Image 1 (spheres, rainbow over the protein chains, first blue to last red):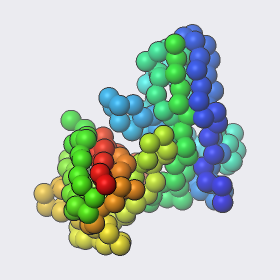
Image 2 (cartoon, one colour):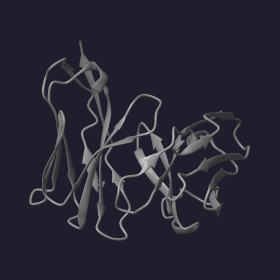
Image 3 (cartoon, chains in turn purple, cyan):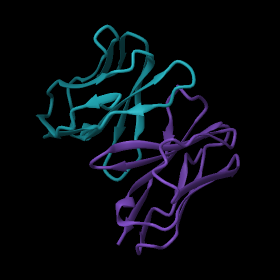
Image 4 (cartoon, each protein chain N blue to C red):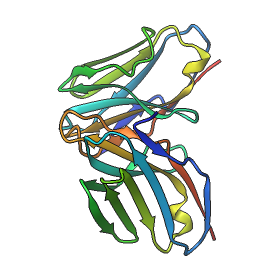
Amino acid sequence: DAGVIQSPRHEVTEMGQEVTLRCKPISGHDYLFWYRQTMMRGLELLIYFNNNVPIDDSGMPEDRFSAKMPNASFSTLKIQPSEPRDSAVYFCASSRSLSLGYTFGSGTRLTVV
Amino acid sequence: QKEVEQDPGPLSVPEGAIVSLNCTYSNSAFQYFMWYRQYSRKGPELLMYTYSSGNKEDGRFTAQVDKSSKYISLFIRDSQPSDSATYLCAASRNQGGKLIFGQGTELSVKP
């Protein structure tokens, strides 16, 4: 099992540009989560899906952020337009259950200049 | 107030010391409690998992949950330099509950 796979590992972009982060969850995991980690705020849940359906997006900062899960093996998190305050490490995680442990990917380090 | 509070540290101890990491939480509906370990520039990995109150031991690691005081602890015995990482506590409700993380405590074990 390759674990949760995220791409790219690093992304540097200019303010105003569109950024797309990608995630491939572990096969058989019905839940997929997008987290954002910063020094100031720690690990924050942005959105999570169950069986490809968005369940809770209350953590999405604003309309500039959107997430999709077109099938069980792929999800994207898009930021348009990006701003410097979006700079953070974005993690994708998957799980068989909402209450059990999650398996995290290695994260995408986003820098918006 | 965050639902799960954790002292960010940093915490520095000598090799072989017993380490105590702690969290408090505010939501009495939390039933599942976890500890994650995160090495630098890596994703968090599940270290310990407990349900409701009580202790759970796994090698050098012991997790404790005291629901009466809403207190979560992780003890590391005979700490090693390889234990140097950020430790995050997390909690969720029994059903329909998202996993809520604490801020994380940065631990450094000096040889």
